[in-house]
Length: 424
Ligand code: ADP
Image (cartoon, rainbow, N blue to C red; front, side, top):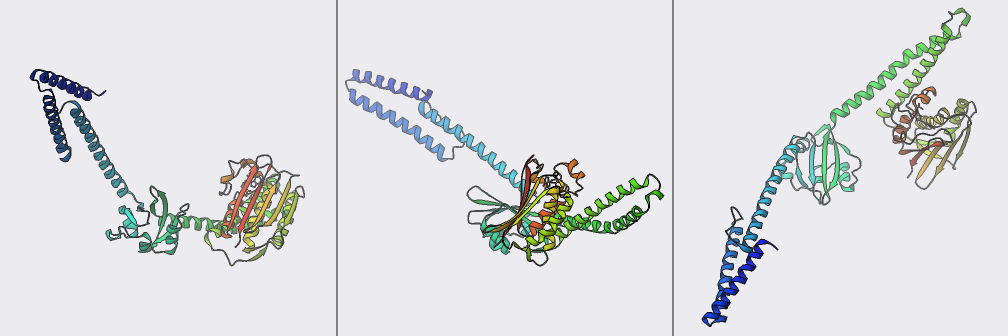
């Protein structure tokens, strides 16, 4: 039992005893008890009154002097009050610190409430979007009216960020990322990505230009090497034939690399040419002939297609992407394995799958296969003579054709590459 309560009980028992004895001697037992009880109650009320006054004054300073239960209650209230004050000042310091941190950020931060009105923003947000104090509690879509932004906020799918020109500076490019938190509130992060995009454009231009520029010297080199290889080898010094053959192989590789880089750069920097219906069955005919030639008829290549497999797109790009998948199945797998090409249609999409029963790919490599120059097995891939850019080209072509690439594979059992083209 609490100390204060024990003291209080002892006090009541002693008082009752004293009153009983006094009543016994003065002959007015009930009156004495009533008088004593009344005095005790008046004393208790006085304690309560003091406690109230202390609480009403905000509980500042030491609590009123008291013993027993009231002493305990005052002490506990005092401790609670002190803890509260400390927590409040910690919280205030934390809020100040968070404000300083958000003020130091280069990224804009806006908090939107459940109604998507602006609840708070940091200085960077007002710098990037020109927000003023009158904009507080305004719907964000009244402040940023671009249709893509309105749709971004309304549909609530924030998996991918949105890129948009700054409202008052069209040459400045902003990226909006959003996360839902708390009671359906939104934290909107705004980044100025103008410089990043400029650098990316410079990188694309540089790669495009350099690959383009490499083509001319490579063509000259290839021409001379071929001419020399056509010479009577007996007339050449002994070390030359081997060196010439290696030079020929390497220039061929460099040619392929330059071509793939030019293709990738074009895919990144241009918009898709006018889409026309492409018959995939016809598109695959030369691909399969070339694949058989590449394989030396050592792989068992099968082809099947649904009726009239037409796809809206650019035939050259589709040829490049789909041929890469088929040639990969030949290049990266041993003779004798089956390669199955199938075109199927369902209610929403046309899909093209290239499956093989070859060596397969370790699943840890699959998420990175479409990165430039990424190879699952570098020693095997270098021997196969690939550029390491094939699947990156496939990814870009599919992006431009509303398509999606999925790769499934079990090591030792083969791989399936499926291109699914959404159709309305
Ligand atoms: P590469 O020019 O090396 O073929 P890609 O980008 O086309 O470059 O392919 C990337 C890597 O994916 C290849 O190096 C190879 O390791 C792996 N790969 C692609 N297709 C297959 C396949 N059908 N079977 C096994 N590995 C494959």
